[in-house]
Each structure stands twice: as C-alpha cells, then as structure tokens.
Image (tube, rainbow, N blue to C red; front, side):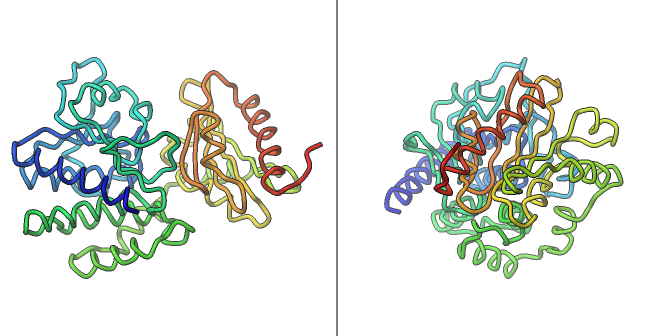
Length: 346
C-alpha cells in the first residue's frame, strides 16, 4: 500500500509540473480498447487539459459503434502508422503497462521524454517509478477517479463533470460485470455512488447501451457460438469458437462478441472457458478466457504472451490455425487445471 501511495504521489507530481509548463501528455489505451480503457483515457485527458496540459488520447482505430453513446469521443485522435510521431513530454499507457499492447503507437510511447502507466492488470516485471499498477482495483477507471480527486485537491477546484462521470461509470460497470464479478471493490461502489450523487447520469440508458442494445446479426452469432460449445474434462473446461466466415456471414465484428465468454462461464460445473475467434487475416486466433475456482486465467494467458486478470484474460496466437489452437490450448488447460486442483496427471 505504501508503494502504491508513493507511486501515485510521484505520478501526481509529474502531472502537476507538466500542467504548470503546458507540457504535452499522450494517453494511450491498449489495442482493441474497451469502455474501461477509453473511459479512463478520455477522462484523464479532459482533466489534464483543464489544468494546463496539452493532452492527446491516441488510439489505433475509431471507437466502435457499440461505444458511440459515450461522451467526448470527438477528442480521440486516430494514429496513422505512416506518420511521424512527435515526442511527448509524457506518455501514459492506460489500462495496460506493456508497450507491445499499444500496437504501432509503441513508437510514440518510446520516443516520449517520460513514460508511465495506469493499469489494474496483473504484472510480472517490476513497475517503473511512474507506473501506477494496482491489480486489486476493479478497473482502471477506479484508479483514474482517485487521480482526478487528488488533482481537484491540488488545484482547489472541481474537475469532475457529468461527462467524466459517465465515462468512469461505463468503465467500472463493464469491468465488474455490472458489479457482479469478484473484482468489485467497496471503493468502486463508493465512487459510483458519489458520481451519481454529484452529477446527472442516466444510468438506465448507460446500461442499455453497454449491455442490452443489440442487432439480429449479433443475436445470430451468439447462437452460433453457444452451439459450438464443447465440454472437456467432464465439463470443467468449456471451449467455443467462431470463424471469420461466420462473422462475415452474420455481418458482425469482433466488437459484437463482447461478454459472450462471460455468458458461457455461467454454465454450471465449469472451471474455465475458452472462446476462440479467428483473426482478420485467418492466420491466427484470439482467445478470451474466463475462469472460476482455482484456474488463474491471467497466469495461463501470460504463458502465451497475453495477460489480464485472475478471472478474465486473453491472448492472441499468431500463425496458428483455429483447430490447432484449440487442440494445443485444451491440452495445456487440462494439465493446468489438474495441477491447481491437486489431481495427478496421467
């Protein structure tokens, strides 16, 4: 806890000094960003701009249609890989802490004078001095809420507003599964209550756009995925998959697959769920992992270059056909599951 407080103080000190000098700050959410990553990045950029920084939220692709209801998306800048990247005074990775999760923007990150991160994913290497990584936090938006609250104290004026409240709530709600996942903290519940007390946020509309808004194609692909479920190890491991042809046939994108792996995890008796999604180039597979019990999803994903949380993680296998990926991951998952349950392997 002391180390966390020290890191937050150092980060706040750098942000305060940059604001005093009109310094430039890049906020870089991870590739294939979600509501937590983009909500945290935009909220922090808006606040840093308000206190004197020149803040830029830089992403690899335009926000998907499913996030079109979120405020302040117009401040987001789409990075052009062929364009040169002017060094920033400070580059902050958001909802990740590894440069390789930034895609082409990793070049902008490495060129910046100072580098840091705000993240709640499990880490293996020792964080840098400006890395605020708190795996016990429910979301990166929870951490950004605290940063903004501290900045309000430092500048002695209100920095939160209804748009920032909406963005932070979107990140907290999605990363906690509507406050149902085991990562839900008392802190994020108190933060949500505070935001709802202070600002006018249409919570029912936010929930509708985040979870209920759908299309015929999305419902159809969900049926396809659920029909592909294969129980392994007496149902303790569940796999499901979707091909690029199926996605194209239903007229949906990868973004439409959000929460499906969590839906499968609701089946009784399973310890871990793997959802395999064929990549755009059909040369690899993206894998979403959701776990229960003793299976550490993050640790498993890190073995294949991925990462995440204890109960929710992901990774991408390059140059690996779908069938081969399923066979390999199931084989490794069997061994991992038997080990964590204390069972002998045959």
